[in-house]
Length: 314
Image 1 (tube, rainbow, N blue to C red):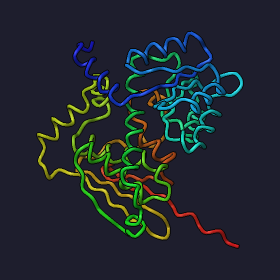
Image 2 (image 1 turned 180 degrees about the horizontal axis):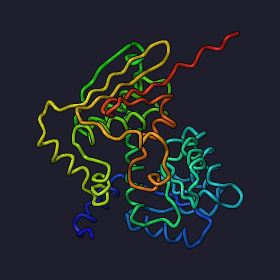
Image 3 (image 1 turned 90 degrees about the horizontal axis):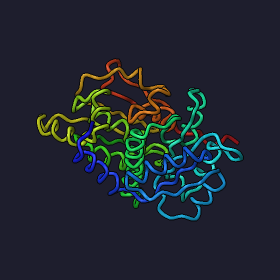
Image 4 (image 1 turned 120 degrees about the vertical axis):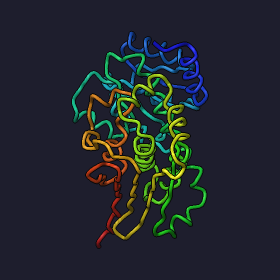
């Protein structure tokens, strides 16, 4: 059981980046439970009981940070809501967490390809909600990093290739926002780039495995553990990211100094991991951020590609 100081620190960290969360569910009991959990985490909560009201709230309310959305609802279902939101330039950046009672992998793939950020399964475990919200806010911060580097794109348009070194989570996040501008659709690729760079830091440089990361996230101690390990490691222990643009498309190569990991377990969408606090980033990168993702045999080097679309042939 977590001690009180850790719980307070974690809530404080979440609240510092938070604004409003929209919770959408036609089941009154589920809606009440989610509303209470989110309020305990320090958020202002808006609620809706159907898809139409959810869209109205998104159109009329300012500063909605995240949407927790039931998939199966009468009238407009959750997936339709996702697709409509992702078509709106002013709303498409908002992370949507889908709540579902299904464990159908194809249904989940359909949702992720439509733009779902994470999944929670019914009955929702209250202790997972905070972790998923934190992850969604991290995703939103990636878009902020992208905006920080998007004012002048001339340099990105002129560049053919570039190589970078990075070592810390903050460097990975900032670099992800920078590198995204090399891709044809930066908003599409930003989350996938960040997932690959953070994987290189957490697993490659710091040697934090999947199970250990889950424990640290549950205790709100991942950042602290990363900082401790980085302080103990040689300063020259870094990862590299190389970007190149050709007529065939854009490719990103990320290599870290670690021993690698069992990457084959993480490149396909797995419903059992879709509900947890982590473990989805690489599969989502492959499904939505890039056209192709390939690892070397050990897993400490990955190539992500977005192919150029051919010109229309009259």
